[in-house]
Structure formats: structure tokens, C-alpha cells
Figure 1 (cartoon, one colour):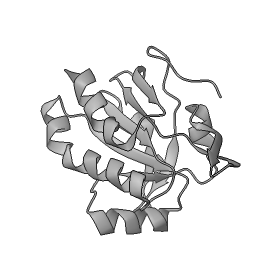
Figure 2 (figure 1 turned 90 degrees about the horizontal axis):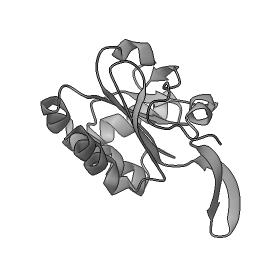
Figure 3 (figure 1 turned 90 degrees about the vertical axis):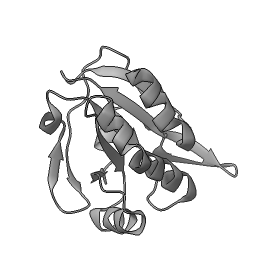
Length: 154
């Protein structure tokens, strides 16, 4: 798992969102983008993280119009239910084959109750206007995604 560092080119993506639309990294050229990876829609930590991103939309707008997207291995239908249940209102992308997660270095071995398995390592990335990593936070806690991003935005 190769981690991305500030200055690295962000891995491109072209994924389906919860509404069936294709969303690409290139769609955000010229503006900053917060991308966060979460393990599974509608689980406690992912709900906390996603609702905090939702609640910070005005702060991200005030910080220069930073767009936000969440990415998980969930299918679009699960993403849609998650979005509707919590009125998230931003793109949730379905990385069902975890290829994008691998490209960002967030697909790796996890341990839960002694059982090892492969999954998403909760992480977030602030991508600059030129498609480069401005900040990378690996193994970020659900409650720290927004504060770390807002702090980085100054």
C-alpha cells in the first residue's frame, strides 16, 4: 500500500454516484476537493464522518468553495439509501472493486475482533485546484475528517 503525499498527483477516478451519475476527478479541475474514504455506508463511524462533512458544507464554501465527495466499496443503491436517510447532499461514489481505494493507498489489511480481512482504511485527502494532493490523512478518526480539513484550509 503506497501512501500518497503532499505534492503527489491525485489518482484519477471515474465512478458512479448514488444517483447513477458518473463523477470524475477531472470534474473538479480548478477547485479544491475533499475526498474521504469510508468503510461502509450507514455504520456508526461512517455516519458520524459523513454527517460532519454534511454539516460543514457552509464552512467548506466559505473556505473558497471546497467540494466534497465520499467514496466506499458500497453499491450505488446502498449509497443512495445512506444519502436519503441522512440528507447528505453530496456525491457518494461506489468503488465496488476498490481500485480507486488501492490507487489512494487506503485498501489494506484490517483486524476486527482478531479476524484479519481486507478493507478501507478510513482516510481523507485535500486535493488542490491542479489535481495534486495538498494534504493526506491516513487512519483518520471519523470525528477528525472535518476539523483536519478546515484547519488545513486556514
